Structure formats: structure tokens, C-alpha cells
Image: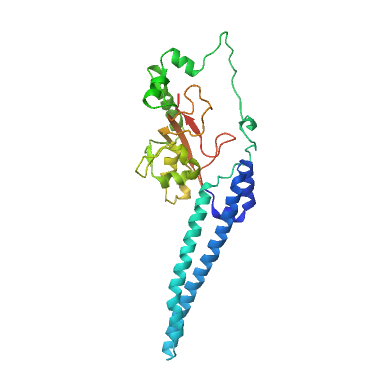
Length: 312
């Protein structure tokens, strides 16, 4: 979440960031946010002025009474001020809530090294290593191999749960778990603290990690309860220090979480549909660095945390 001070002092920087992200439709929200912030500050200043005036009147009444002067006019003015403040504070709260909702929907600033582009074709290759092997036969992908050897069953999964689910069987179950162990051992060796977080989170927790208005259609909700299934361990890791002020001397904090992830993948129909990609359920090992903010330190086109997927 961007700080309102940054938006207030550098609106063009935020506006340029929206253009670079291909989100020009949010510029109107930015304009609305700036107006709400101006209204909030104006009303807040008026409420502060009235409080100051109330204190001044209190002192004036005490002085006038000592002198035996009439204080009826001062009392009348003092009696009206609390109601005036109440009305103004209602507007202040309204402006603040609306501004916070927009702030939650605005994306973080991308690093200056991130290339500007319209789609994945504009990604820049950061690093390449190894030699691409050549085969004397046509190599099979994971789904063909899995089906041939009875390690993956999407038909049975479709019968019991619907599309984009799968059964893993036999050695592929072991491989999936081994990959997670490998990821955990790797990151623990770099002194990251390991977490297995709750698999369900309250709405305000999820909203603190993502713009929920943009992501609510891809997150599973428990009907009748204030709980959402975990879409990524990152949300729970972020929330571990929710409502806390962290001593700067203890930073950075290095965390890693392992969890299942549940996603509706709404709108992803027709993309990566062969095999078990863009599925509704998978496991993942994820690392996160808490510094002065969550650092965007993975590849050139990321904006959140390093992610090591344990999906098969």
C-alpha cells in the first residue's frame, strides 16, 4: 500500500507508474484520491481550529468570571462547538475511508530497472545459464508423461471436484513433497525462518495484502464466515506483523512459508490449459523479506517477493 504522503507529494510519479503498468484507467482514481486527501486535510484543519477555539473560550470564561463579567455569549458559543466538531469528524472519517479504499487499489511503484511493456513479449531476459539439451526423440511434457505412467489423473479429479483439479499418484506424490522439502532446506540454509501459516484468513487481512476489489473474484470465500482460503502464503506472512511497529534495528526479517494455495483462476480460461497449470489448488514454498517495506526483489517483472513454487 502506498503512503498517502508519497501520493500527495509526488502524484506525477504515481501517475507515471500507472502508465508503465498499463493501468491508465486508475488515473481517475488517483485524481479522486488527491481530491479526497485535500478535503480530508481541510476538514481536519477546521476540526483542529474548533478544538483550539473551544480551549480559548474555556480560558476566556474562567477569566471573565473572575472579573464578574457576563459569559453567556461565550457559553453559547462553547456549547455549539462539540456538535460542529461531530459533524466535521463524520466527514473526515468518510473522506479517510474512501481515500484508504483507493490507496488499497493502487499498485506499488515498480523498480526503475523494470522494463516498460504491454505484455510478456516485452519481458527482458535477465540471466541465462546451462545448455539446452537436444534429444533423438520427441520429448513429452509433464501431462503426457504423467498420464502415460498413471501418475496424474485429471478425469477422476474432474468427476469429484470439477475442472482444473487433479490427482497425483505414487512417485509423483513423493516428488511433489520432495520438491517442497528441497525448497525449505534451501531457504532455511540461508537463515530464513520457516512458517506454516493458517490456511484461512479474515477479509481485512487479505485486503491488507492485496487490492481485494481486484482479486476477490479469484479468491475462495467460506460461505457465511469471515474467512477466505489462502491464495498464497505471502498474505499470511505479511499479516504476521499486522498492527505492529517493528524496531528498525531488527530489520530485515527473512521469512519463508509453505502452504497449499487455492485460487479460482477466474478469467484464465484457455490459457495454459494443457496439464496441471492454472489449477485451483497447489502447494508452494514462498520466501518474503520484511525490510522497511516488503521488497520487490525477484525477476524484472515482479513487484512482491521471491516465490519458489512446489506445484508439480
